[in-house]
Length: 131
Image (tube, rainbow, N blue to C red):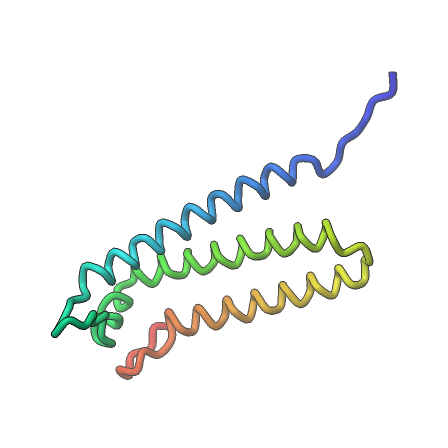
């Protein structure tokens, strides 16, 4: 009997599980933000009035909201990376094209990550810098 060595088989279940974990994190965050908007909005003269700028600033002024928002965006980017990588592995046969797509995706996700950190932890307009 010939012994078979299976390599890479465990990556699929790990990726599947991580996509589910990131999806749960993202849905939880979205539900919280939607509930916050609904609970803090009001109707004025038969018109829905959403949150004003001051309320949004108040929400994101706390450390925990910024940290949870950063976790949300890291989850979004990791979720996207797993999806893009798996689709490219399945449907792009050329190794060179696959490498180009991977590099572009990684560069874009890293740039978006820097942008999110800058938005969440950078200058807020009041003269206070968080970085």
